[in-house]
Amino acid sequence: MTFLDYAPAPESQAVLHLRDEYGLFIGGEFRAGGGTPFASINPATEKQIAMIAHANEADVDAAVAAARKAYTTTWSKLSGSDRGKYLFRIARLLQERARELAVAESLDNGKPIKESRDVDVPLVAAWFFYYAGWADKLDHVGLGASPAPRGVAAQVIPWNFPLLMLAWKIAPALAAGNTVVLKPAETTSLTALLFAEIVQQADLPPGVVNIITGAGDSGVPLVGHPDVDIVAFTGSTPVGRAIAKSTAGTRKKVILELGGKAANIVFDDAPIDQAIEGIVNGIFFNQGHVCCAGSRLLVQESVHDEVVDRLKARLSTLRLGDPLDKNTDIGAINSAAQLERIRTLSDVGEAEGAERWTAACEIPANGFWFAPTIFDNVSTSHRIAREEIFGPVLSVLTFRTPAEAIAKANNTPYGLSAGIWTDKGSRILAVADQLRAGVIWANTFNRFDPSSPFGGYKESGYGREGGRHGIAAYLQGATK
Ligand code: NAP
Ligand code: MG
Image 1 (cartoon, rainbow, N blue to C red):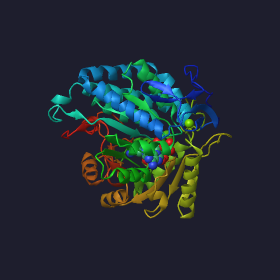
Image 2: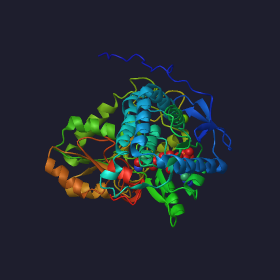
Image 3: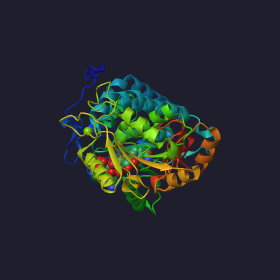
Image 4: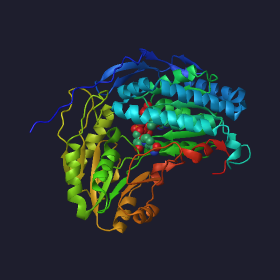
């Protein structure tokens, strides 16, 4: 039998005009940073994309001062409808520059272009449109009488959805009347800097949005800055814990969106075809670099063999390679450090006795890659069932009764998301009620919408982003 092969279909990079060097964006202008600039590399080729400025403490001071000045003199004085106009303008510019942003995101992060083009960037624009619509309605939606902004927001985001996490942070903050200083992750600064250009294009008053680039050492003084009123952090649980400690006892409002180890529960009456697609989407979307990824498959024992066999067949059809190729399903791992972490935890899984299966695929010579992998016969005590791998690795566990499924699903220090696959609506409601997770999908997975709040239980953090809860966090004394 012969198979039709795919011809390469790379997205053109002609739409993207990158500079060789990027500065910090402070007070409406790009300027050099005080630290030593660093290179952002393309994880699919290991080639340098651009040099990025590194913010030191003096730069952080300058950015917070610019945000404070903009807050006091202009942004907090504008009417909600005027703030909304700026946000609508940003949303439209994001749509106009959508292709360019998608190419930049895939280049810098390694995610497949079909994901950045069809998921990340459309959601980024949707987030700005959504919160633009809130800006002039805050007095009338039960958030209290004339709810007031908090002031200056310090926002720190991770590398897995660089532009989308920026949108989750900046859109509600600005709609509520706050000004911001945002730090993207060191390995994925590019789209935040293109966003800074959009801020200039939208003619936003200088200092309303400031972007400082750098590593964790730029994040520490930002989060700790005494003139910051609200800290919003998305990232790992250890860093979130450190931020919670360092801000305890201060007047700062803190929102933490941290890690996860979600259970994706498949009952024996589930529509298997859809469930297979949902499991694949749940853990192999974005190379598994997803905080709410369905990294623990809990499958009812009677359908275990069928589900695992069909999953392996489906994974064998996924195409791994050039993130800019429109046919690519699995892109590059974002960094050498992350690849090392995935390898280490996978080796631990094997050593602990789980059964490892890896999809046969050609791994490109350069860049950071990890083939889709399944671990079967995993038990709840295995490290690969407890720790976040943050890569394209699925741990499979079984259960016999709904009660066992619920007990195993909740047996984790995390509680960000969960999935339920069954034909019975009543079972969905009964199980969802007992799962300790912030977001629960039924017969689908990894669906995001700006109107829907997102956030965790337990070590997955506190606070909610999205929807009414997402904007209430940025308002003083708002009733939720
Ligand atoms: P990370 O190491 O915690 O880094 C997150 C951000 O914090 C980066 O910008 C990082 O800078 C910065 N940072 C590091 N140390 C800091 C410190 N002491 N003070 C202030 N900022 C500091 O997380 P990551 O490895 O980039 O991201 C993966 C994690 O994020 C996973 O655990 C994932 O589950 C979680 N995540 C959660 C959500 C959610 O909504 N719950 C969404 C996406 C990701 P540098 O990277 O530049 O060093
Ligand atoms: Mg990069």
